[in-house]
Length: 399
Ligand code: ATP
Ligand code: MG
Image 1: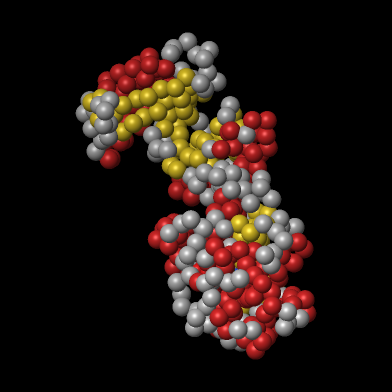
Image 2: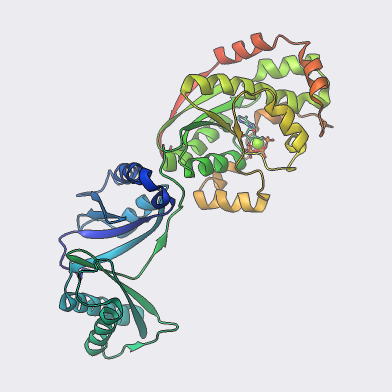
């Protein structure tokens, strides 16, 4: 349905934190706009512009609202989106479009009450906000007899925003993810397993503007092709939000075999983690990543106690970011469902860590003991051999 005078469909996009960035605001806005353009690449006639603190997306009329909104809402930094009617900044034009919109609401959706809220962003417009709301409301009442005003609990809350030369009428504000535009906070390497947690961790750091690259450890042939494919699928879902990236697949089996042979069984988990960190760090440096990202949540399992995490981190020289550290499993699952990774994560393929799972893992490892165990190994040779086995798998949005 079309009510306005504009040739195009219009969507108002509000950015959240980027608007707090002071002198850096234009940079954040540029990055945001670039991402919106990218995610709407498949749509026709897309124009994205910055106008007085808001971002406006215009598309050809043939575009589907749902598809445009779904694209924009995946852009980090977007606080909310409103499909809007654009008319001349003129009270008659506003009333006509608002009335047509409300008639539809009444006839097609059974709306019986409404309220108009107005905001005059262009202070040179001669009528003040409360009057704009009042006049528009009165004209709607005149045009659509079945409607009544309810200022407390209206069926439809209609916004009118008066800007330079144009006015915008909209009802819905669809929430975005918030955060900061991708690429405004460097790049991190996610240690991506096939589980529930690490894809969510990647998403959360990307939401803060961090570009993503991934490393996955497998134990081929103990872990199969299906397990690797599952991780590739998960990475593809993460890429919907953070764009195409590389996933480095590393065979950890030689490391695990050495550890099983030469070290105490209970230390296996933490020792494996330390190797993962070392190998990941080498990959991160080569890929231009400044941080490692993992999906631990404090106390979730034996290797995720504060002591175990400290011993794990001692093997890495880079900051290790753990965005899920204070979340409960149920909260992590909710996030996984919201971003669309959950169903894939729960597919039952084995993970490299389950291959040599100790019966009684140490929950409070001491660094000296761990270092003593590692002194029986040629750590550098094992790391180098693991890196030799590395394959690079390009990951595309949606798989
Ligand atoms: P997830 O759900 O992410 O698999 P988890 O609850 O199974 O996490 P752990 O097995 O203790 O927890 O792993 C902790 C973190 O270590 C993971 O979130 C992930 O970042 C990393 N990790 C574990 N296994 C792998 C793997 N096979 N490849 C890459 N990273 C891994
Ligand atoms: Mg796991």
